[in-house]
Every structure is written in structure tokens, then in C-alpha cells.
Image (tube, rainbow, N blue to C red; front, side, top):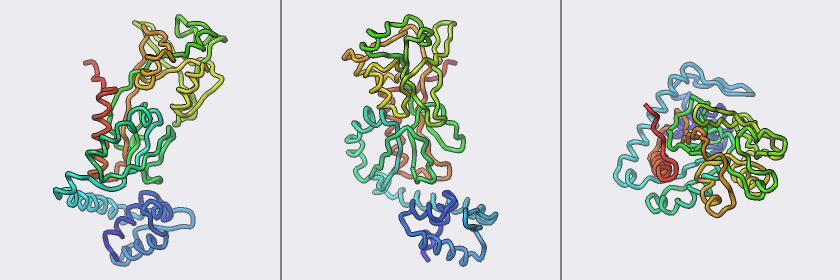
Length: 307
């Protein structure tokens, strides 16, 4: 029995709650994972997991052992990456999930510079606005906009996305130019709805000017759950959009989008990188997080709170 493999298999079963899912994330057979955990229990002479036909639960002894194992695995990784070659050249596979517009407009175009610095990192990038289960799907980190509700995750605040309101010229020719945000509630105006992954619902947009504050719900004929589709719908004249500056910049410059309510303000949208609390921050994950944070300082720096 390879004790390292056995401890890694046990830790992943605890994290995923399943031998099958653990095997998938470790790229091993379920039989191999089961045998490794059984051999570990035999060596320790203690039951680490309670198994039923439906689920796997960690025992009290197993929970205590898991905490020690996670620290030990982290120390072993640190020992390896502390070697000069590993520390200066992080390597290995990194699974991340990022919003589709951020990938298309900022992250992917900047990847040649990333690979020039870290040629031995393999990025498997999921591009979506869906909710990702980092443990079950073995994802190392996600980049997400908006306040994160899962307080169990570790997170780093890397940007504040400034927002504006826009519409295509074709929409404004048809519906007219609204002078006040409340006019978007009128029957002849439409917005493009965005379905947030956390709820599957569209939320009102809070806008303020001086002491005046309004929440705009609007009416839509189309609601989508993907940022690129949301932008495409606005460009097609299907309704008014609320966009981060980085998404609107090029289309505003070439006249495809017209800014509205420029004397009104919206609270910036925070952008976070989140990762599992019990997953060691490896060298490759650390440099990826630092790279995204550095990149976003040029596009949407974090806004310091007013004291």
C-alpha cells in the first residue's frame, strides 16, 4: 500500500462523500480507491468511514484523522514546491471555472503572457455562469461576480466591476430614449433579463443619484443565464442592459451601444476568486490567483471603502 495514495484517496472520499466521485476526481477506478481506504483502515486498525448503499459518512475517528491528513498532504506539497525548480516553475493541471464574458474579453487574450511565465501549468477552464460544486467537480477555483453566499469557501476579492446602463441604437429608435430609470417600468420599454445562477431569477437593479434611489425591475421578453448571450441580446435591440465597463467599452466606442442615465450610479459588482477551504493552495493555484488579481488591476481595480 502506498500510504500517500491511500491518504489522498481517503481525503477525497471525505470531501466528495462518495467513492465513485472520489475515483473520478483522482482518475482512478472505484475499486482502487475502495481498496486503498480499506488498507488504510486495516493499517490503522480503526474504522474511518461508515458505508451504506446510499452514502458514505466519516466516523469520529475518521474526522479527526482527516484533519491531520489534510495538513500532512499540504506539508508534503509545500516540501516539493519549496525546491528551487518547483517553486520557480509551478507545474501541473489546474481546473478553474470563470464567467464567459470575462474569459472571452480579458482572461483568454492574456493567456499567452501567463504561459510565457508558467509554461508547465495545464489549465482546464470551464466557461460558464452556472453554480459549480468545487468539491464534487474537483475544481480548484472559480471566478465569480457578485456577493458570494457560501461562507464555507475561501475567497479573494480581486476586482470591483463598474456598471453602466446601455441600449442599442435600434432599440432607442423604436422605444425612445428614457430620461429617468423609472421609465423602464413603462409598457413600451423592455430590458434584457439576466437569470442569476444562485436563484434562477432576475433581480432588480438599484440606481442612485444624490439622495434619490430607485430599484428597476423592468419588463423583458427574453431572460438568459449567460453573459455573452446577454450582451448579444442587447446588441440585437431586444432591451436595455446593465453591463460592466469592460463588456461595454468596445461597443460603446463603435456606436453599437449608447449609454443611458449617465448622471446615475450603480454600486460596483465585486469579483471574487473562491476555492475550497480544505484544499491546499498549491503553487500553481497561488500563481493563477495572483495572475488574475494582477490582470484585473488594469481592468477593474478594487475600490477602497470610503472611511
